[in-house]
Structure formats: structure tokens, C-alpha cells
Image 1 (tube, one colour):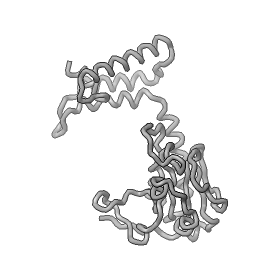
Image 2 (cartoon, helix red, strand yellow):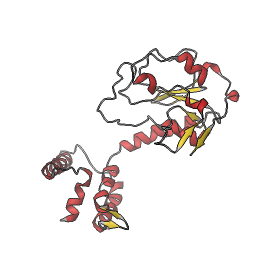
Image 3 (cartoon, rainbow, N blue to C red):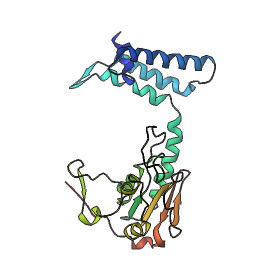
Image 4 (cartoon, rainbow, N blue to C red):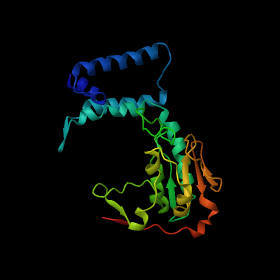
Length: 240
């Protein structure tokens, strides 16, 4: 019985009745989908799903100092039975390949925000992002030693801090959050490259002086003002 309760770990709330109703609805929807052949399990997934089920049954409630471990295992099932990750991985690979073309130590302005968040709709919205891309640009820090505009550097919250000169650089959040026009002239003076989500609307639009550099199905990189990549300055960051 305890293991059955643990299966509710992915939908658990403070209301037990709601949890049970939600579980019944999910099981019912999956059952109907299988009967009507609207959904199916790939044969290649039988083994991983079976192994995960055995692990879930065998997992103790406590491991070392970590409690309720068995409740956390069922989330693996959710990750295993969706093929959306395949499509997402395809776009992520495209993005990383584009990042690898950037010069070492460049300054990258990342304008990618939630797909529902642009200059025409400043509110974040409540719809979950189906394919998160907002922070993919930060891979450029690891792969190309780039300075990325949306790096988390809040004093007192993050272990990474930037030097005063880089702290003064503009970010897209300063303008989208207030629904303000984006000062592309100032951004052009501060950054070497920029990246945008293709479906994102910006006000005013991306300047014609931004030269397409690398792209994917969901994004576009630009070189700003035709700057020679060899002229890109090195990034300066400090860590606490």
C-alpha cells in the first residue's frame, strides 16, 4: 500500500482526495488512449519502464539522510513515456552547435525569453514553456568563455559576480518586463553578438545592421554591426 501511495509522488498535494481523483483521471485517460489506440508504448521502452518499475518497488523510503526517496522515483516514469524530449533535444543540439561557432570571450546579448513574453505582451503568463530555451545561451559561458547577458549574478543570491564594467551592460529583461522599446543602438555598442527566438516579437524589430550569423529552426544568432569576430574582447568575471 505504501508503494502505491508513493506512485502519487508526482501529483501529491495537501489534499488527499484531490490526489486520488487526479490519479484516477490520469490512469483513466491513459487506459482510454490505449484502448482507442490514440496512444501507445514504443517496444523499445518496455525494458526501461520495467527496470524503473522494479527500482520503484525496491526503493526504500529513506537512503542515508534523505527521506521519502520512493516518492520521488515515479517522476522518472513521466520522463520516460514522453517523446517530446526527442524533439527538444534536436533543437538543443542545434543551439549548442551555433554557440560553438562564436568567438572565444565574446559578449552575447540573449533576447530569448518565454515564448509568451515579448514587447507586445510583457506579462509572463501562466502557460508552462513546452520547450524551455530561455537560459540555453548560458552554455556559451562554458563552451566559449562568453559573457552572456542573462547570466544569474544577483548579489547575495548567486555565487558568480561580474565586474562593474560588465554589470552595467543592458539586458533584455530591463525592457520586456516594462513593455519598453529596446534601445538597439546602446545594445549595439555594448555587445558583439545577439540571439533571438524566431517566434518572438520585439519592439522595435531587430535592426537591419545585425548580420545573420548562425541559426536553427527555433532561433537566430546575429553578429552586431558586422563586427570582425577577431575583435571581440575577452570576458571578465569573478567568482566569490
